[in-house]
Length: 277
Image 1 (cartoon, rainbow, N blue to C red):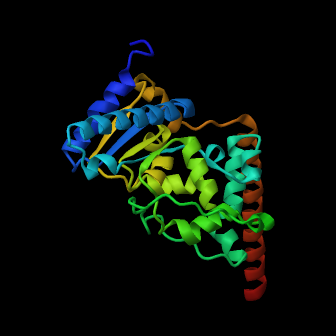
Image 2 (image 1 turned 180 degrees about the vertical axis):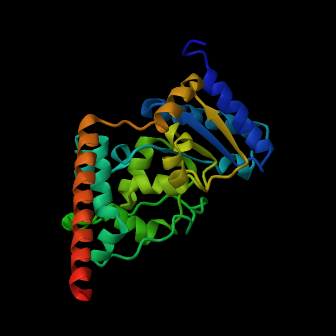
């Protein structure tokens, strides 16, 4: 079907109503191809839920379950980051590397930061009132660690996140107000969110899904937008690209390793011969 015919709104309306009727189906996982599509789905969802709750209120049928909805989108660090070193990176790979260099457990341990806590610890309670905690400017003084991640580790993992639909801009604003890393806030929140919107790769790529999606409920409804792209996504996720220069370096390393092993064997044999002769 062509774009603009209301497919997304229809699907969201139906599934969210089904979730309201069947509370045991606690999560909708909506997979998209691009960041723009992900944000558009969240914006559509916000309008759908607002209209639905208005109609339920008119009929005196509005319940707590209808209003207590948490929806989040998850994308790459580069798109959900407040640290200038990451946002100014030239590529996604560079952004990921810079982020890991500031948040890895061994890096934090070497700077005396609190040890990283388990990903499954401290899931958000979602009935909290909205409040703002403005981060101090001094947090950016230490370039070796990310101040937003450190504040999320100390305050965010057990903190309260209000109900609502968090588009990318909304999550960035929330993280900026609290001084928390928006990427890790969103990544942690998907475990308790009613609606999760993210890229195909987070569910289909075994390397990524094992880190991001392993704790999501089995009783989830999964939607693949533009599902005819699934084949290509799976092929890409399970393929390995090798270049000639990489193979040549591997061959050189193997030759050096073989020569070193032969050298050690000859040395040991000579030592034994000398010792027992």
